Image (cartoon, rainbow, N blue to C red):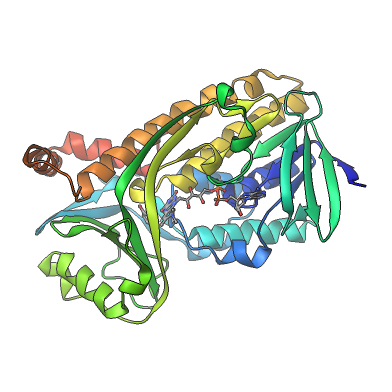
Length: 394
Ligand code: RFL
Ligand code: PHB
């Protein structure tokens, strides 16, 4: 027999979207339960994003989980963009009237949110098996799962599908009620983490004839680097030495000599994809974060979009429960999608500009070169890039 539990909002997924939503709802007195398929250790070990927009930081402030972020996060007022041997410094301060981004790992954001939930003793089921969402069109949708051998059924007013791209929430919407838009890129990113000082204080995004590279970091002592690789590549093909040699050969010569090598402490390959599902709601189920959309990581938008979805969804649920106004809930998908598509456009554009496309024609190559020449020579073009990178308004 399944144990029945009642709450107001059931959240599927304990990634940044689910945890942040849970925290903001709890702060507003709205009961919620989180169900996560993986163990807590697994969730906390994932290495992903690194760049936070100010809107994301503001939400983490509101959720009261930002103390460590303000102590340890690095404020960045710009980055470098390189094309072969040429590089341009984009100064956000000048181009966006004083805005900046914060470099603080998604792993740390997830740790801070998890700790806050555990400290407040709010309900969260890790290692949940056979998670299913049912009765989505009824007034009381259900979430079924098995935890430590016991079957559970949660009855709530709403289900928030925060279970990422491979989750079950989007997959539970009948195909006739959802439309999917997708672009798959013909390459991946090979990333390494190493306890070495970053090659410079700010990020470098570069396009080299051998492919894209990105120099990022987690602190003044820990670097995060990425190289474009082929989709069928394997981390086993990449010794640390091969990685450092390839990165060094792609960097402009003025920076290459400053690269500090060291053993990698993580190495992984991620495919690149653009994806949007419309609408982001079906009956009482609402999708937020990677469950509803994916961007290639080039624009650093994935986690930030998850945060803006959570902003719209938590605001709508607060209006529903606290002001008895359901209009924002009904409009959640339309509102969130407007910002999502702009971030999709930006991430797609930056990906096209910075990567080597294996099937690129000579015409495409000249267009890519013209993109750089325009960007390097036009302050208006630099302003557009910087405005999108620091984050469009909510
Ligand atoms: P997540 O983080 O995937 O979390 C979803 C959670 O749901 C769980 N789950 C389930 N739980 C219960 N039942 C089921 N059936 C379930 N199925 C799945 C999963 O175990 C997981 O815990 O999605 P969320 O919360 O929407 O967060 C999205 C972000 O993680 C993602 O967009 C970013 O990491 C993307 N991203 C970046 N975003 C940025 O904003 N800035 C960056 O600098 C940035 N860099 C990156 C990135 C993603 C990368 N990879 C690995 C694709 C760099 C890389 C390399
Ligand atoms: C990262 O530090 O992991 C990172 C930074 C910027 C991106 C993507 C990833 O665009």
